[in-house]
Length: 204
Image (cartoon, rainbow, N blue to C red):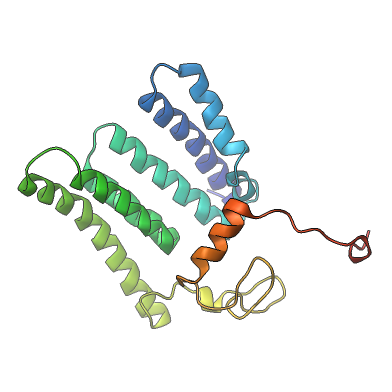
């Protein structure tokens, strides 16, 4: 399957899965579920990565599809081992996706059952997740010499320069993972506005 074909398939899957999850959660709004699915796919930042068939964006699309599969599984048969595996696979595309396991851990911890039953369910959830994350760490260590190095340090931009030390708007110089990025990105995501550019700075 080509990159374009894979992107189209994953995007269609995301649209269908968002429709399915909405209809499962709110069965009385069948027609509106379609609009919610269209709004997610074409009225959010998802369209920015779904419209371009390149390897970096393709990883984002796969991650979104895997997360939707995990959500639908939780709303359906609730096979925790499968949910943990799906989150583990999403983590293999982008490390921050592993934080999504916290939601399911919280849902299991606050769910029904005795402490022993909830502990057993947490084990079912976390074992496949930990297994896949461990495999990823071993792969990173074997290839790059560090379990948390996914190749970002060696990735080149369109100018043939490494991304890691490249300090420009949209790319902060430094490691791929850092808690210092969270406040800055939250500010841009929640309150950021398009930057105003002086007319003389625009070459057209």
